[in-house]
Image (cartoon, rainbow, N blue to C red; front, side):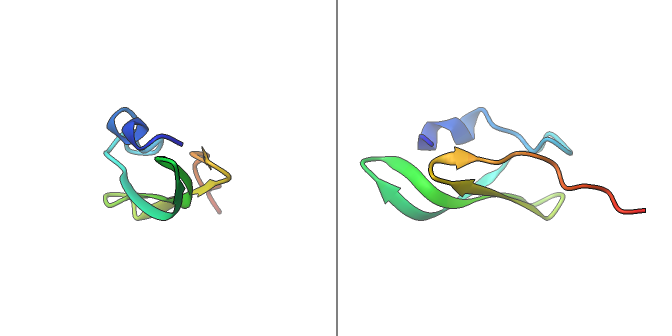
Length: 60
């Protein structure tokens, strides 16, 4: 994932900004890391360069 994507990505739950936390970066691409929503307190993982922005399942 390119770092520049954080400028256009938003939390799918609240539409708030996401903070990028990089674990592994290669040639300017984020390979693993986390996108964090400070409002919802939800972490969205980045694995093999692909962010998973699937909202968590609600439990009843």
